[in-house]
Length: 71
Image (cartoon, rainbow, N blue to C red):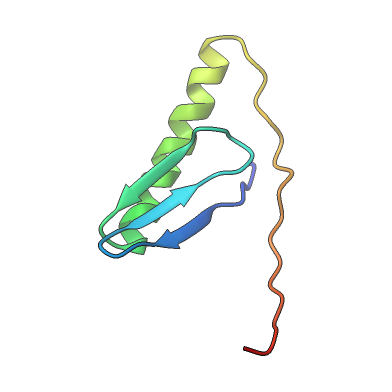
């Protein structure tokens, strides 16, 4: 089991999700919950396609931190 960092972005009418360690792996949903479901499926399909093509599966390497600053 591997855990990949997922970045979520709220847009004016939808949510986007992307995986920095899997270039081109992204999803868009009407809600964050939908985007989360879709990105999970996208990650699974991405990895399956790499394996099918005999390509290596990238190891998770990206981490996330939050920095608080005065605004």
